[in-house]
Image (cartoon, rainbow, N blue to C red):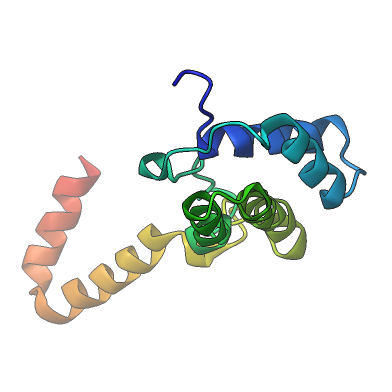
Length: 142
């Protein structure tokens, strides 16, 4: 069972291929993955995950290919498994190019702390008496 790849193994291998040849096509990656993994044991559906890329791509994008991978495993079709890996790879690669990176400080919508602090301030100003507000601000500044 040790020669059974996981979906993560295949995805990481796809990332390595892209890193080694960044100007190569996704078809090149697909054919290399098929050569390396095709014909071997299929990944287990129990480990149908890939590394999280939430700081680069929203989860719904980096997991976009997993249903195709799952179908490929169920049907024992390496073409579908690799097609699903390529879909997720494209998402991981293209999202930062097409928009600001989500972990970029300029993309404030990602920073929930700021909006929560603003909402909290409004509530405190509206409902907390001035004396309590002054006392709370003094204790926070200490």
